[in-house]
Amino acid sequence: MKMIDLLDLNARSDVEAAASALSAREPLLTGGVRPQLVRSLRALQRRLREAANTRYVRHRVLRAHILPLTNATFSRAGDRCLTGSYDRTCKLWDVHTGAELRTFKAHGNVVFSVAFSNLDEKHVLTGSFDKTARVWSAQTGECVQTLWGHAAEVVSAKFDPTNQLVATASMDNTARLYNTSSGQELGALRGHTGEVVVLHFNSSGNMLLTGSFDGTLALWDTRTNQRAGVLSGHTEEISNCQFNFDCSLVASCSFDRTARVWDPRQMKCLATIAGHEEELQDVSFDYSGRRLATCSTDCTARVWDAAEDFGLIALMEGHRDEICKVCFSPGGTQLLTASQDRTARLWTVETGACVQVLDGHQDDLFFCSFSYNGDVLLTASKDNTCRVWRRDQGALLRPGTGDLPDDDQDVIDDHVGD
Image 1 (tube, helix red, strand yellow):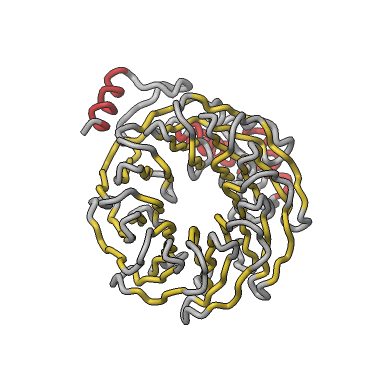
Image 2: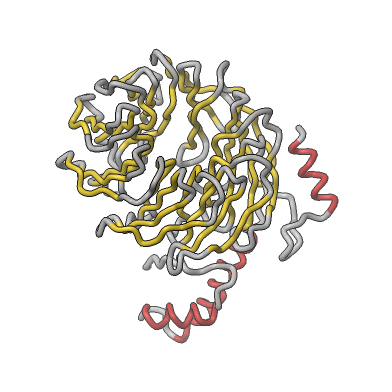
């Protein structure tokens, strides 16, 4: 057997042409199997079309903390989630039952960043305004390591892909690297002249990307703790940044109303993406790295072509207040946004049409996410709750419209009101 990635296949692809292109480069795809190949491609294409109109019903409300939430994240399987709060704790939840599984309590100030360890998810990582990060056992709730060294609030903390390193970002203008097992600081990454607010490891863990309020991004070699390069061009603070799937591109967004796409190997800007009327809040690649989503305080989200001309693909309008978070569904056919208008929205990427409004929160939303396989959504709000939404298996969509028959729409409304 051989696995073949079909990252270019979408709902509008010419299946016959795609089959010919595959047959030309794959010797095992002989003429005798072409009919089967075409049928398989059509089936995949049909799945993509159906996924573009997926709807969700409310499953659980997690009344998570006594003070407002700061952050949330899914486990890879989508069966658990973490929440951080101004109440100085992090909590672990069972998504399906709504049960609180564990409370991680030792920080002396706001818990602002939460993360699972990669792959095994046996550990939890928290970053706090008490200037420390902590590593916890997800099984027992015990604090395994306390990571000291920062002189100001820790606002982001991540495990590297192998869980051997922890990286932290702080308002003291530095990022730091620690050994996960010993808690020993391995290096302070100095060079930014403003607060470091976001960081990401690449897929191999040998590079760390940081974004700062000084308007720059930096790439660091985690083997030497040295800065490998600086990505300069934004004129105001960085609000977020991200690697694409294979780490061949970096995207960033800024309060200067633009997003930028960078080649991290050549340390150069490939495109400046303009069009939003106000500050950008978030940026996200789809699973293939060929599309880029942005959202802004101008109440819109947009999807851009990140593979060729960086042109606008779709404009999402409908939110009544600023959008703070945006993410693609696992298949890349839907976009999820969270807004200060107290709702999240699902959109069809190809058309920009709103598929569903996820309402019910009583205050601003600051987080939204798909589970790894897309069957569950998580939204988090300043109303101290998280809401878990499950894919609706019963609603039948009218082909090509994204609308439900009247009786099925009543079912959706009834579930959301439960």
